[in-house]
Figure 1 (cartoon, rainbow, N blue to C red):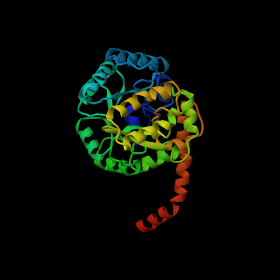
Figure 2: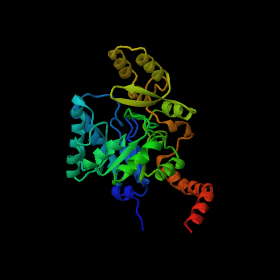
Figure 3: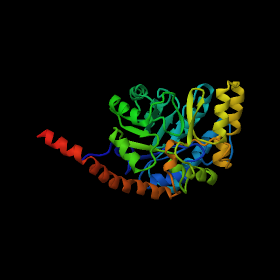
Figure 4: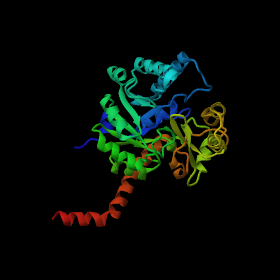
Length: 341
């Protein structure tokens, strides 16, 4: 009997990984997804009521949320470690300390080199999933010893690399490049996306925005409603130094792009980002004038379900969608069968 590699690696029932979302994926969402058979992942600031620049407090808040997750479920879960660059790595180092001390089952590592923390996490018995945006990044992560890679296609919400590679192109490239399991994300909001990812070579899927719009999500109700109202091309890619962020189109993205395209001074751009951050949208509810990291699949979202029920629905719908796919492929399958004889 064949076993899905991601399910086997993470000791979960379904190869669905809830992507960590800043200010959004707190203990309630993580526990709901993990308890339903997927892998819930704690976001960096989810559960906080304010912004802190205190390194010690950053780590202790993560510790408190880990304890809260364990009070809600005994299923495996993950914690996001945002590596960062330069001085910012002081925060990720503290988070790693806490993750190791608390014996967290899985680390989802992003925005930085896999060489920084993989050895320490692996030595502590923690499974390491590393986010990448090219096949070469995947090879480097595999050489660094990570257990699986997460492909983040250009359609995905939040921060990603500058390559512009879409989920459709990136996933098979990475699947061909490495022997370790591959999780893919970017625009996946329903069972059709799950099937497509698997057909492209992924072992599991990475789903963010769809879980943002659930009852257990810590996202402000104004933000959830804004996503429900989104139609068609409803996101913008905005440059942020070494990264690109995909956000729900609103007054914030329009102003940011105006500043960038007009050649505004860097400090003016930084001031705009800091004054209209996800803290202001996700926590305070400014859905029209602040940043909302959001994937291109937003316009496929039409309700606010219970997160555990969403996992069950996705799994159930995969079977029916697969049956429809077989019918569409019937001519090709018959032709292939005749050719084989």
